[in-house]
Length: 274
Image (tube, rainbow, N blue to C red; front, side):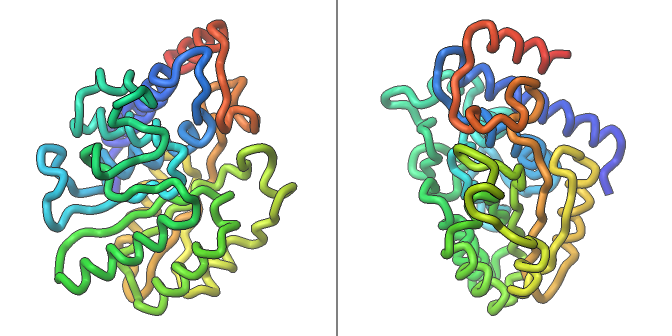
């Protein structure tokens, strides 16, 4: 159960992450604003309330692990890791620059706190299955979380991994679907229908939980429920808004990987500070 003061802290962390995303991409630069802003509250709850880790010892055995399968949202994870103390905040300004550790997609070989290289959509859940199985075999503590984009669910490998996770009864594996209903160029419903997500995951043998992906109280409760589940993996379908927090970006597909003018940049900062 999350207390009111913890909820306030998590909302403040999410606000700080959003501000960092906008500042690190900046004006007149192409970047993945939409999906980064939709997943922010989820990352805030995981890193500042739910997960066990040591930012000074990123390889600590028994830590919880997070795989950002929707890797284009890397700016949100970078901002979160910097705020959590994995590396200096100033380094965020090196995003996608030559020689930077903060590339367009996460690289676990270069940046502390990243657990897996991701970028080819649909592969993160398979890696999560492997990590959860390894933890069981090694009798190691900790849970594995995998964040998927909803457009990513159009990849067949996701469902192969879902089938394997249920077969092996990986109850320390939690998938989180950032369900913002948009993909790179249009609404998901106009490109490839996903159908009834609850029924799909349930029929593969998963415990299904739904939550408002921008309500930290609901997110905490949903993750608590996943943690108490036994005998099968859990999935949280988090209903989110692409571009959350910036009026001209919300639910606008072009900001999946778009650019802000200087005027829009200043407006975005004002809205996030309001």
